Image 1: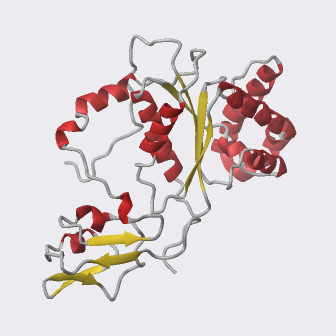
Image 2 (image 1 turned 60 degrees about the vertical axis):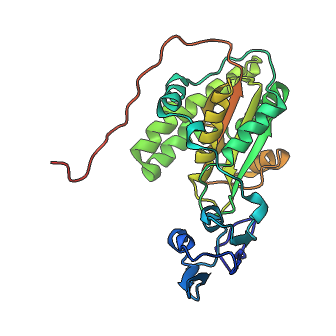
Image 3 (image 1 turned 90 degrees about the horizontal axis):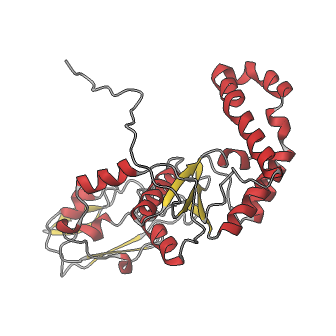
Length: 308
């Protein structure tokens, strides 16, 4: 058995066209499974790979004569495409300007997000580095304001069933077990979230996901690296921004739909296949407002090791 994911537990099959192989050794250099060696001036399969082919496709992508094919683990020779010329890539300044103008948008025009735009966002997100292939990232798409609002209503019904989770007695009980920082987080963020979500929804005001024209939820399986859904969601957010949409990442929903019977029922209703260690929602739509200025941001710290 090769490296397991929810999608496959088999290793991919490597095929080498010996006649075309020129023995350049590039496949040997880039394969970190050590699946290739040079023998007699040709690339051949190694007797001692680390995992067995995980299907990353590096060898196919770098071979100058197309002498290598990979099949299995959700990859095939049909997945290879030619890269664009460097001159067609975004410059640093273009990319940096996109990043700097991005702000979290929660005010949207009464205009839907077209299917072709959603498809482009998903295609861009698929290019994200997502751990060992094939990706174990899953995406729930809510492609209309109506679907987004119904999800928010269902989520608030779920919160009503677990209000004890932010009750004074429960937080007091848990403080010795989960420590000062978690106690401060629950009292200063989670508890107010429950209040503002539920009180506003009773008034018909949706501050869970702001009645956005579209939303995407990125999550993983139990095999997934916890960072993978967040990385893919970030790619989706930037793609949406490049297409003229405003976006906002919502981090409060995911952790509250992971545990308990009510959370399981909500996941099942929306076809969310797995509990996930990490996950995040992105809301998106055409922005109703325009910011005039950006805000400079900082890291908590940046240390260069060994700097004199």
